[in-house]
Every structure is written in structure tokens, then in C-alpha cells.
Image: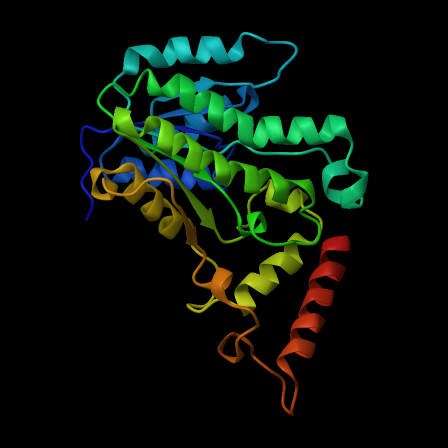
Length: 288
């Protein structure tokens, strides 16, 4: 069992109990870390209530690009400063407008392109720059990617481009921060059933494909994702930086659905045909 007593981690991006960042925060706290959460102001009260059960008592609002509170980021880091030294930081901020998901890729507007890349990638660069000043003893920075950084997922649109940029930022920050003793890595989990994922057109079909191609069966659990994140945040990953690790139970390495994952009806039904049928079912369910 990992022991990270005395380690202090800042985790940003959780919104509720289904968020991947909440799963990471919960696992880190259970292994003994002091966890500090930053989140959008509308989620503060919710996370404070969740945190009570996990001994997480510090939750600060952080609203990037909020025209009503342009000083939000500066104010958040003023609150974080007394907690230094910080030993680990998790970035889980991402998003795009519906135009970036529903319109054809070539119709992405310049405004939405810039907003998507700013929120999903530049915030990682900017927060890492600010956080390094609080990481005076070195440590680990981690961000959340997705397999769409390496291929096309219907409905994911411009977010795939944003995740590609994010993974490139991991390598560049790892090079820059290496002399400071700060590691920079990413994890790429399965398509999880989070609130934000539900806003992606075709999310049920994406999930069905992940489950059909999983070597270990199903999708990664929040505990599995959280454990992998804690490994990267902990001194046990001291020799690893500039990497993005899949936490997807093998689905990212598969190129076709596996018979072991498919409860096929009687008769000679080809795997491809069966998977197409499952995707259609998922889309019909999504449209209800």
C-alpha cells in the first residue's frame, strides 16, 4: 500500500462525486496525503460536503476566463501560497462549446478553437508555471488526457486537437521543469461516465467501443485511475517524466472488438456486425 503521509497535493478540476479528479483526490487522501481542491465557484459547496468524509477541508474557487471575476486565479493562488511546499499538482480542466462537438470539424470557428485550446491546454501551462513556485522541494505535476489525442472519435471534435496539444505540453514542461526536480506526466483514462462526458455526442457509443475492446474487460474504475495518479504524484515515480500513461484496461491498444467481451447471440454473428448493432443501440438510447 502506498504511503504518502506528509505529502501535500493540489487537485483542480473536480465538480462532483463522478469527476475523475474527485476520484484522484479521494484516493490520495485515503493514502495519507493532505489534499487541497480548487474548482469552479459553483462546485465549492458540493465538494466541501464530499470532502468532509475524506478529511479534505480546503476547497478554493478557481474560475479561469470568468468576466465577472477576472482576479479569480490570482486570488486562488494567494490562498494556496500558505500551504507551500506543494508536492503534487493535478490539472483536470478541459472543455469546449457545443459548436466544437456538433459541427463538422472544418467549421470550427476561430473563437471556439482559441477558447477550447486556452481552457484545455493553456490553463495547464499557466497553472504549472504558477505552481512550480510553490513546489520548492520538487515534486510531480499531472494532467488528464484521452485517447482522442491519437485518433478520431466521432463527436469529440476539436477536443481531440486540444488533447494532442496537452500531451505536447507535458513533454515541454517536463523538459523545462526537470532541473527543478519537478516531474510532469499525464494519464489517459478510459472514457468514464462523468457529467462532462455526457455532453459529448456519441458518448454511449464511445463507451461501448471501449468496453468491447478492453483486454481486462470493462472500463477503468475510479479507484484504478486514482491509484495510477497517486503513483505519479508519489516519490515512487521519481524516475518518470514527460510520459502519458493509458489507464484504460487495454482498450487503447486494441484494434478490434474482442470475443471475450461480447455476449454474442446464438448463431454465427461476426464481431464487427455485433459491435455496430451495439453502437446503434447506444445512440438510440442517447437520443431518448
